[in-house]
Length: 397
Image 1 (tube, rainbow, N blue to C red):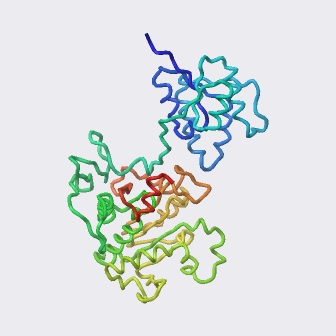
Image 2: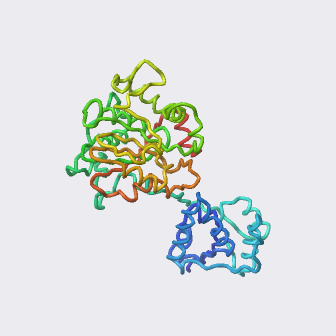
Image 3: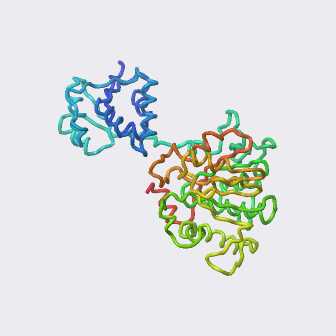
């Protein structure tokens, strides 16, 4: 005897949390899936939301790709001016549908209670797969059995194997850059990419505390002051959070940026303590440090226009706050002899006009992935900058 088909009705929050929930619930053709008309209205509303619009686009694309995987419920009446009581209209659609034993799938606990009051069964969607940007989804590793991507890694017998410009090799050695010893295998692989002479642009994605800025600065000092393969270090930071206030701050550009780049100065001083980097400073005994602009310079994004950068290491920090146009304008400034490090976390976006998918870091991964001069890595590990940060990451705060 075949099990009876389940009749699932999907709420908006489920589709936004996991656009593929529709197919998961249908499970081939085992169950029937319905979408209330008011859910479509909610999706239409959210498509203009800068934080949700890209996810709505994925939901709509999946619906268009699988038109036979669901049916739309009819609405006897439409919520006026799209009121805040739209949940009541969704429940009315279910009641009027005549579906036998409908199950409303929603993660909204209040809606679950409302459904129960009308005799409608409900359950939470437990297999939620939160949206991941390309910068998170492509970790820099490829699966065994698939064609390797240029400058990617794979695990073979528990050891990381690098598919680099010289072919495949096991990374069984430990890097050290400007006195910095990697704290994890992922940090070691990051230094493999950051210091490789044939890789011109590297992007690093990670949550806070895994050391991407510290490693990038250590690699930059190694290349400029030790190997002398480059002449100067530039650190470019999008100043979006300052907005127009940047022009009203007193002093020179360095003084205007200082409150927003102090962490860079602190990291440089930490590296200076590990190994003296006197050539970076006009006076190494002054704090905040006064940098010799022949060797090290902090620049806001606005100052890049019109420049041609050559023979330098360029660190672009918090690249997730750059738009696609800003990213193009910045990277097109790079001339001969440039090594560029693009750092960021696509889940920590301050620019309200950008999303996890539509941001500079993610565009770099999407467009450059597979290039011979480009590499990407997602930093992770058991420990970050400290126990509190560890707890934040593990708890999902």
